Length: 367
Ligand code: ADP
Image (cartoon, rainbow, N blue to C red; front, side, top):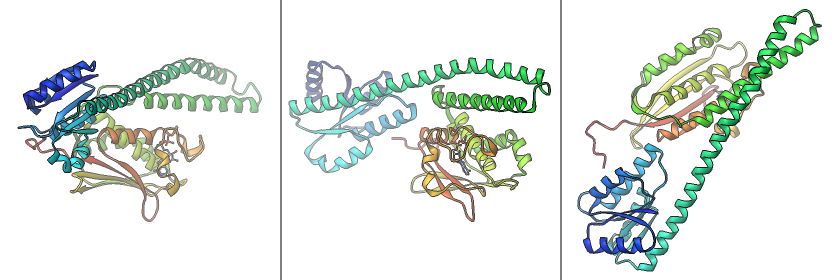
């Protein structure tokens, strides 16, 4: 493994460096938390061993910063081991809550340290293998979807040709069959597009920047203009705050939620959709809601609908779709460090709620 050591006591640092190198790891050491944090930013590490008490950045600060950077950059897992003195042992819960995986009490026993690092290596190896399998799976889905598109294009275009050339010349049943096949091909095309969108989600670079949600909602309403007009939907939106996020992903989220609010209504009903927000001071987050007065989601399905390709309605008819939209919404919200869930709306319909962290003030303390 590539291991970073943060230790301000020179003798301990040198002993750690020698031991860890002897056990076959590649070691880099920082003389305090600040230096270790700078080194962490310069290259990739599999494991960080950090002293708890250090002047400036403490071990807890280092742990918190690493975990924040990891969730922001979606980078590979780093195993974090804290070195604590006997007196800090009681604060262990605090260290583990901050994101440390394990701890060793100083003065440390060489064998204990060796086996704890080995346990860390097993976790890091597992995580790397899992990430590799995920990458392979995602490439497989991408390639398979691309390859499926090609023959589908041939089917659709020749059937379209057949329909245009022979409509009315064959018997009525033949016309109807051709129509069914064309519908099926269109549904399959949408399914493949959504499958690709799901597999590719997050593979393009994410840019986190301030996003004005009012502007984003306006854009979505314009884009959904036709279905809003057709359904005569009434959409009300409270003035929303700005958040820190990826504009493209948040736009996808709003489009899926508003689009579903319009789509999942009783026949001929005029849907009423409401977008609101509240502040959760304790969690330092905004809680947004998109509510509709449509057909609702039974309680037993409120979690399952976030799984990819999970649908409660058959294909075709007014509720056509692929079942990917909500799984993408969940991915978006998780990337943004929030949570998304469903509650029943009163007196009827569905209420989607999601949280997003409140942006930090420009000169806020980020330690
Ligand atoms: P899709 O709309 O393409 O089927 P989604 O992932 O967006 O895929 O939704 C999954 C399922 O959840 C839908 O098939 C539908 O059964 C249900 N659903 C989603 N949004 C709503 C809603 N606003 N009201 C009622 N049911 C909904």
